[in-house]
Length: 71
Image 1: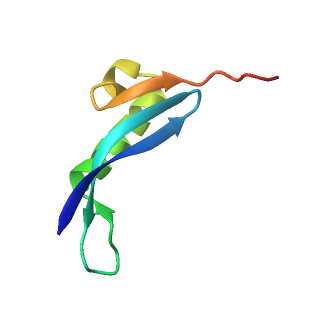
Image 2: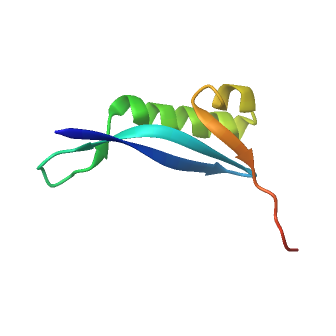
């Protein structure tokens, strides 16, 4: 079993967050997959962005605001 770091993007409304997670690679058919703690972390970030609670989201991720460049 190998673990490697990966950045997942979570987009919610006008925000996008970069969340660091670990991918677990095995010889099984469902590889690679996330640890349960990382799944909860992604859910927490998504929920915080939905509420507009950027401070809470930044506990687990780097958060950015999306700005359109063309009308």
